[in-house]
Length: 448
Figure (cartoon, rainbow, N blue to C red):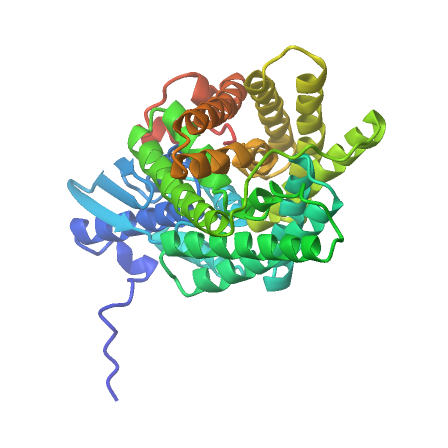
């Protein structure tokens, strides 16, 4: 029997100091890259990725660590033991896992100098072995309830909400199966957008044919595919730009643009084939008290559903939904009863969301991003965005440009509100901080 050790096995810690300097650095750099790719694949922003890698690099003995992050790639250079190593890593998983982001954040916060590479790998193994918090049925229902809540917030009635619920349920089930097979995201979003649109239009057309409803339910088709809006990468992309991580922000927002374009093409193709007009809804006639109570409920449900889609724990989902219920209803009241423009109201709401998320992140172990993104994502103007794409496809350039300008202003207002809240509550955002200076950053124990 051959008792020789496998050359591919990682050396034990007691053997680590006996390795040549370049081999020690290769192991140190490798575990740092692994952490960065885990964060990037979970949807974390560029600043968190670089900051976390720098902290781990210092903990395992790397003297200086520099990193460059895009949406799918990381390039690092590490200096230690009188030598250096440059490494390139790539992740093709462009997903969102809020629970993993928080687990990795806790791991980074607990780092101390002198950590072994073996211990770091063991901790990352434990984090990456965690299964998703929700199964297939819960995931599908989360998307369905979130879109139904969106339908009411977009002035939909009972019929729209019910049909949107079913269309989003089937659409999310299809997307989940395709994503598990690692299919191209552009094709997945296009197919699921067409499927959700087709299901909604078919149901409403059948109800009209039987005479059970009137023809005032066209705009609900947009709510049926709002589960496809890439809210998490959109928000983190904006924050990347604010932090001057331009390469990461531009590539992330390019990914968002591609997905929105593919979905918009699908919506236009189906609606144009069926001669379906995406006109604004009038909304049900309700008393102000009932209307605002239902807005609170719909905002809570929509945000809670998106938090579940991001794989947030129930405690985080409930907190984010509670923040959204208060701030989004307040935003709508401001628009209804004051002269404030909608984008200014969105900016104020995003500011308060960021401040509340910062307060809760101090009390709990969860990060601000996992608390704030589900709350702000329900303010992303999906309806005017898809109306703009439909109008552009139909040659209605003036109408399309008006809708695009509205979308851009609202999205910018969300980014400004969150950025200002970060600068108020986090010194690392208020002052420019160099993530390559690992020793100074490691001693900065402020939670991020």
